[in-house]
Image 1 (spheres, helix red, strand yellow):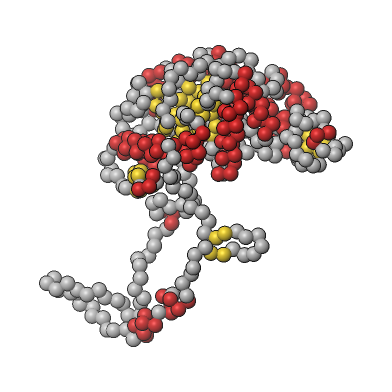
Image 2 (cartoon, rainbow, N blue to C red):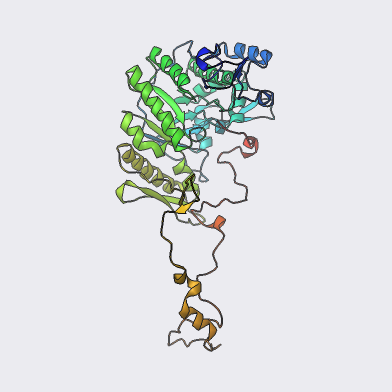
Length: 456
């Protein structure tokens, strides 16, 4: 059974996204429903699973069944992501950190879940933080990790544990909106976001909704929810997976700006991995918080941040001595980088990611944007160099005396040139991929090594 257009289809918008062609019964025919069994997606092609998941989250409506706890304190413009303690025994003094959810919990052979600490002070000691450090727990992460949290978060009373840890804020997990999944699976994941936020509020934890959407209709549902809940000012989005590309990231931020304008009250977005959009964010939001792991990760890679003229900044490698502490370097990087983010939010120019050197033209081949040197100018065709190679001078095997500086010597028949280059994988600041396995930046490498696909 096909429909002529989305406007005539009874499944729009409840069971579909609103594509304009190739509609079929119980969803769009562009979906491969064989994937529903493979990935256990929520779809009308499996009514048993659909009914069980409706009962699991109570309904698929974009609606909160209780108010969230108000956030009655100010957040800084920048909060660093913190994965684990430093090697030094001395705790680091820092006002705020953002700890990913998967750092605090790990699966115990699939039969349960273990947590990093029991109480408030033990958690901060395990992370190497000062007892007065305020912690924000960020929910976005790999799909298998947040699925483990969903499976055990009620039985293990994990949300009450967040309260006992004195967690100031909890941004709920970003259950994924896959582009090739049936729309009902998106509704199921959106309901899971809402249920976790409600249950965190019931446990006494301030929770922040994670906004995720692929289509305008879904953004409209979020807008209606925020309009009906005036107590919600803080919302969360992440830009490391589904919104990683600049086009998708700016489009999502544009939708958030529309929501703010339509509900006619200011929002305070908590944006994970969105530093590259700081100029756009500062222009459209009166206050915001950017969460970024750059100061932590770059410090462990022995790099130092340096502000450059014109508002730009870059990371430079500088080795450390075997016994040298990297805590001072982390504090320096955090201070300099967060200050630079503040300037970018006010409109200072940001460094842009390097573009591909060739322009893609569908009407023809790739062409360089720069002028190339002529063939005659290449070293291979250097006439003087060729003559020197063909008639080399005799070279003495004796060493120059200590009194007279020796002239640089060239071996017979050898072209002078730079030293043998090192492998690109071993060079600092290199973007070349290394085949060596890299450990995850958390304390549970063995348990978190699940290889989950993330987001869209």
